[in-house]
Length: 468
Image (cartoon, one colour):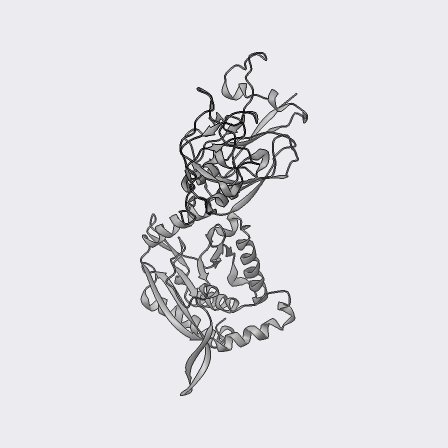
């Protein structure tokens, strides 16, 4: 006998209220085991894989890919009663809806569930989506007669016969919105997805195709016609990207930081010739044989030593308590440009790590961050940040503080630069350091001292040993 259990979206971070469904790894009818990954979600901080809490059979998916769901709302129903072969059409939700189930003779045909796009006040109320009628129904596009390169925009859809309903193409809510924004008629597209559903690629391919205006009606599969046809949107149109997940969190955090903490940025150009030589020598040591050693390792070590010399730079402003919180540990954040937006994972207690372990931590952090695998724990609790703008070919910038921190260091690109050495002009490897700090906590003297010390250690790496 079927025993249905609903899996509710958990809070996988610290007080998160919602998440986006990125990808389902299962479908109705699949067998799942306790601990098996069933879905990927994107929170405001990271992409997280969720495991199934039970053994059983997937009965329903209650959320579409691309949908935003509130924490605590059911996203999947699993039959844990062992009836793996149960007919899905026999499963209903009488108990959940508190409405008696109709008799078998009166029971309407089950239709696919369409979950509303975006967060709803009552996310557990879902309306059914009309399923596509048989292939002989009017106004269904024949894939073999309307190739993708002849896609047109249908402004008025006429039924083949008076009173006949128009066919609704199979597409998920984000795809429908994209098609609407680009002026693409889904009714005229041949879907390449499962069961002929239309995907984002289908819509984008149609929008990028240079089609000609067709004033004559298109001949549909059953001979019916749809009138008032115009050309699709031009290739140079607009694209709309939903602001959600990591990007939404990043935008809110940057706005909050920029308009809460009074920023000051100072710049220092540094001769890093000796540091670059030390990087090359370090790569030859057996302790670093498996690691990718870069100048960022020395920048990180220099910042950690500067924090030990000037602890107030590693602090936060507690407005509620009217206190400055000085942190005598360093969770070193590194800004990472991931596909889903800017994230700042951090290395916990970085100041206590020996140089090989710090290098290993930087490498692991960069790999997981760019792959979108950074966890909420990786992103929480940072105390001070480095952003390496040099990897993008940029000399300097004015970085915005990570919320809750008092300083951020930008490391510019290293390049050959004319430099005066012992009264003689020489070509040296130089870069620009930029330090932004919260002027409520850090005054100009302290900010300048920190930046000067970092520059001095990068000019002469031996100072790192002397000041450690």
